[in-house]
Image (cartoon, chains in turn red, cyan):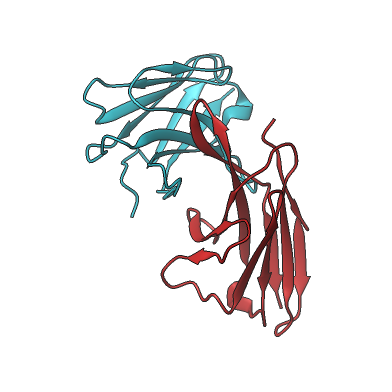
Amino acid sequence: GAVVSQHPSWVICKSGTSVKIECRSLDFQATTMFWYRQFPKQSLMLMATSNEGSKATYEQGVEKDKFLINHASLTLSTLTVTSAHPEDSSFYICSAAALAGGQETQYFGPGTRLLVL
Amino acid sequence: DAKTTQPPSMDCAEGRAANLPCNHSTISGNEYVYWYRQIHSQGPQYIIHGLKNNETNEMASLIITEDRKSSTLILPHATLRDTAVYYCINADSSYKLIFGSGTRLLVRP
């Protein structure tokens, strides 16, 4: 149980284009989903917290107009990187919160590798 | 910033127990201890979590000291597939996970 998928697993795009990444909880409903990114040889950095039906909460330094998050249902959240630039190239990972051992626990997707040329 | 301290790297022999320590001296009363691992180029994998009692599941055991200022993750019989970066994280009910640098565990054949 508690499986999270991401699509696509990797994407290459031209500078200036927008890229949408989907995150789905396959066997549970998640009221809260999270988006992280990870640069090479660094740890995961939380970008935003997304709750179903409401606006996402962004971490300090993350531009909400550049990284659009939509959490339309209890099983789907999307991250759109708008007007992508080479510095946005990174590993984007989502997670979804589910109850485990009486405590909400985050389960992570496999990640999406974005390369902006 | 991460609120936990872990050794940057460790190694152990295949088939032996791997004991990964973590210091969380500033943990507050409502914070849980979570352990995740990340195998190269994959998303993190949940391992185990606990509040104050020791916990065990099919993957590992978690030993939390009585004062809750440190914990140890135990992989009882490490395999080559357990080679990964292991993260120890304190989190409260907000579920916000702050990842530190973790411990890079290398399991030797």
